[in-house]
Every structure is written in C-alpha cells, then in structure tokens.
Length: 124
Image 1 (cartoon, helix red, strand yellow):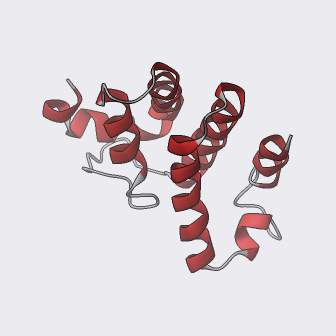
Image 2: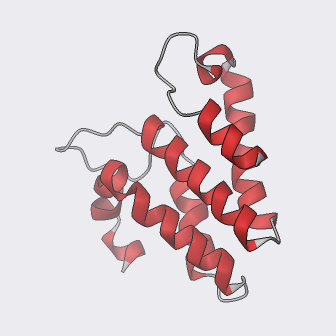
Image 3: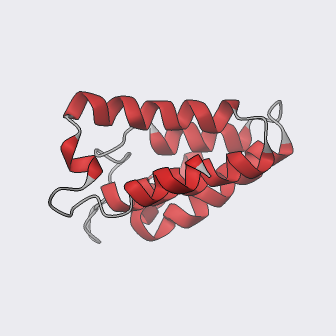
C-alpha cells in the first residue's frame, strides 16, 4: 500500500505545490536513485511491480523529448534507461525482475522512443 501512496504523491509533478516540486534537486536525485535500487532489490513480485509502475510514471512525467530530437539518454533521469535495459538483458536476474523492467521500458516508450531510435545498436 505504501507504493500506491507514493505513486499518488508523485502523480502530478508539474503541479504547483506537488510533493515532487517541494523536494530540492538533491532530494529528487536521491528519490530517483532509490527507486531504481528498490526495483532491483525488491524480492516480492507484487511490490516490485508497483515500484516498476512508480518508476515508469515518474519517468514519463520527467522525460520530455521533442519529436525531432535523438538524444542518447534522458537528461531528466540519465540513469533510468541504462539501468532498465541492463536489467532486461542480464540473464542472471530473476525472470520477474527482468519482466518488470521490460514492462517499465514499454510504458516509457511514449516519452522515450527517441532514445531507443538513437541507440538502435544497443537496443537490438
């Protein structure tokens, strides 16, 4: 239930007075880093899926790339796509973790497709 509440708190990042906007840049960075660590470390499938949902929701709100841009990474969260893709292709990770990371990547495609197009050698 805590994961659901956290997702709700992070639901409207750009709204004035949002929980996210009240955090400083350092705290926002720590929150992003801890979410990725939690995704990788969470043993419970249900909780990990909720964390993946928070990760994709936050990423979709933070990442804003113009259609004609082809960046190698997302400036708003540079660790996100490399970490998710590393988990997806790491055969030593559990199937559940890899599936949740892949699901998060799929959900992020509406915001980050330009990154995937720019890095076809890495994503194929």
